[in-house]
Length: 305
Image 1 (cartoon, rainbow, N blue to C red):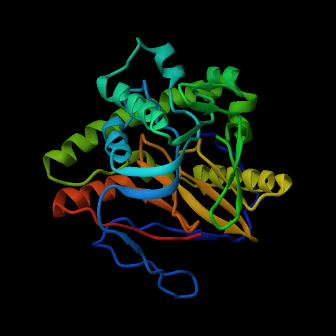
Image 2: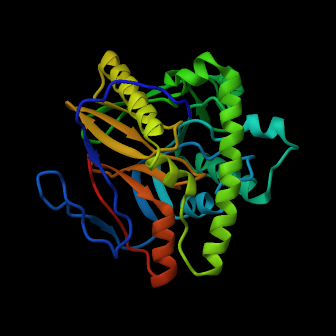
């Protein structure tokens, strides 16, 4: 990520998510408790699901987690919000396409055949797919961006977001070097979690931990959020859904909603919309640990928007 300086953003209402039934319901800034919704049985049913940054073809992709998630949900619309394939990594290294990565693609194709509306919005790591924008391939609609209407009538702009990343736009060399450094960090993260698994500890993201503790990175994230919020206002919509920076979050700034659905390399997160139009983040690594420890499927999540 670039080391940029920017003015401090104005205060925003940020929301955390709870997916583990063992956690207490979080508190909002005014002290009110957010009451979670409990999904009692699989499959978990949603009106819409948004995922991005799966980076299939990269050895650090959490394809097994993603496959487990896709096989545990049902939805009317599935948005693939960019960097689904990591063509950069596949070009740089010898072609890497494990069975688990292929299983994810086949599961998505099967969903499309069964009637799920699947919209694919390519990102910068799979930018060659942008050449096919406006086409439908195997029932999957490819677009540069889309406008999603929630069940409650809110309109959300859906785009990957790399066009608002100044490093990607103005210095491809720096972007590629940053991608390689990130790949090294994710490989280190893999070995850290191998040790944690041997100690019967849950999954933990080293990259996310370092992000939260690096001031320049947090400034970069804030600058990115501000740019996307400005784009949503210019587009005249109620909010937006994006990916790209691997930082899952929902925040509200003066009535405009920013939703980043995260990634499936570090955090294993998805943005989900209920049939009532409520939006929330689902952290699948935590849900999976809960299912493994309890033998049940009470995916508890916070409705935040």
